[in-house]
Every structure is written in structure tokens, then in C-alpha cells.
Length: 361
Image 1 (tube, rainbow, N blue to C red):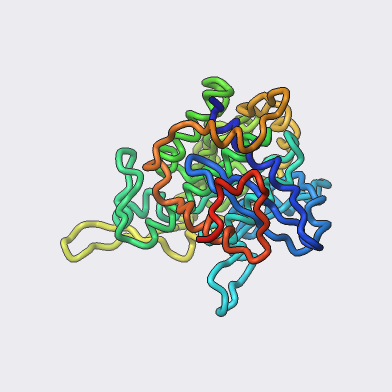
Image 2 (image 1 turned 60 degrees about the vertical axis):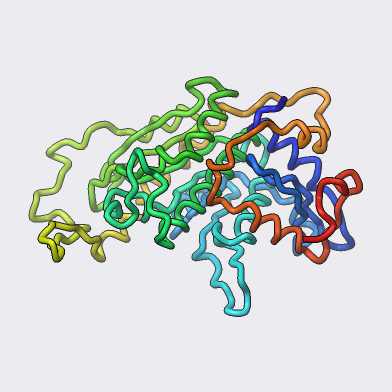
């Protein structure tokens, strides 16, 4: 029986070379615990030959991508800001919450140089951070939050899909980093814990490490504590130690990122102000430091499975897929992804998959 992290790459890879007229069709068995089969048409036949050196997901202004490109890396950024969805379309190909966006992210990772294309995930934290607890009702023991709020549902979907991408990047032999502000409950989320267990099963208990740092050490205007996870110990170099009193600004010079107020019950509450959003932007010194660590990260990445000889067929791997807990992925919505890809008008199903992939939805 194959481990989940082992299976992803060997299910995806044999299926991505199906060609239909002038378009390349990606046929791949989709990733994680509810495997899906689909084909994705590309716009230009030559674009499959492109490979990338670095990926930045949830890029925002893209400071890491800029620094990577300035150092000669072929970097790819991915953010909802990169595309304004037309009013006549249902899906945004730069939004991981959309089926086209998730499919594009998977295709992009499949263009990575095997074992040589690190990825960074700055997962959206608005519903996971400490300041949003009053609304999301999240905590270490209830990281799923209050499902009745759309913001919580969206965050859960993005997080579970990001977990899938992290697992795929690991299967491709890539070093990856994931960043969150201190106080985020992401590390307690069930899908994230499942991904960590899968990586530990292959790379051992030290395959993933956690690091914390003060962003003010990288010239940020506020101290702001962050933490990160990575499948390489090179990321520990981000920690520059404690923030000393000399490094802290005087109280009257500090920038307030939240305002206090009292609700109708007289309880003191806090609300983020206009100064909070700019703290989401990585300072250039931090972006450059992360780029400087790319080569050490590549050399020390862990968790990728060893390829068997001979490589098993994708159908064989699928038939030996292990039992999993669907509750860990209840918000990822694999069905939406399958319906989107299966509905491709140019879809060609390989003959050996005819008995597995339905002829119609």
C-alpha cells in the first residue's frame, strides 16, 4: 500500500502528457484523500515546457517574487489580485477558492523542477488570527471555527486547499515554507495536522520544523511576531533572536494597528485600523533574506518519498489508495474541482481510465 504523499506525484505525472490537437491536456488524478480524475486544457502548447525556480502563493505585492527575479530565479507569483474576474465568468483563475484557480495552482506546481523549485505559502490569516476570535470563534481546540459565517467557510476552504498544495510540493521534492502571524490557529487545523503526519511518516519526526521571528528585525514599522513551518532546517536562519528594549520604539512613536472600544455589554473589544493592513506586506530585507536561503533550503529539504523502480502505473496506484478520513477535508470541496475539470469540452479520457472516470456528470 502506498503512502498518500508518495502516491500524489506518481498519480499526477503519468497523466499530464495527453495531447489534443494544438492544446496540451493535463490528465491527472487529483490529490489527497478523495482522488479525482480530470483533464485541463492549456492555452498554448509550448507552455508545458516552461519550468519555474520559485513559487510565491498569496503573494500580495509580491516582494519575494521581485527579489527572486532580481537574483536570476524564474519566479511565479499567485494571488487573487493578479486577475479581476469578469462579471460574465463564475470562476477566477487566480483565486484558490475558485475551481479554476485551484486547478491552475496544481498545474503550476507540476511544472516545477523536480527537487529544485521551492514554494512559499503566505496563507490568508484574517479568519485565523487572534484578533478575529470573537467572530470566527476559533481556538487551539476548535480550529474549524463557526461555520455559519462565510468568512470562516472561505478560510477553511483556502486552508485545506493550501494543505493539498503543500503535500504536492513535498511529493515533488520541493522545499516549502508557510508563514503566519503569531497567534494564528492554522497549526492546530485538522487538515494541517494530517499533512504533517504524512510528511513525518516519510521523512521522520524532524522532517518539518517551526521557526519564529520578529519582523522588526527586517526593518518593519511594527514589531509583529511571526511563525513559519518548513520542510527544511535552513529556515531557522530567519530567527534573529529577541527584540531588545533598544530595538523597540518608544511608546509614543509606536504605530497602533488596532483601536479599543466597548460593546453594548461593556466588554472591551479591539478592531483593526488602517495601519493593520500594511503589516501584511513583507519588508524587502525579509524577502531578500528568504531568497538568500533558497539554495540551502533546496539542499536540506525533507519528506519526499523515494521513487520505486519500476514506477507503478497511475491506475495501479489509484487502486491501492489507502483509507482516509474525509472529515479532515470537509471544506476543500473536491467535488467542485472534479465537476469543473470533468466539464472541459476538450476532455479526452485515456482508455485505461474509462472504467473509473464517469462518461458524464
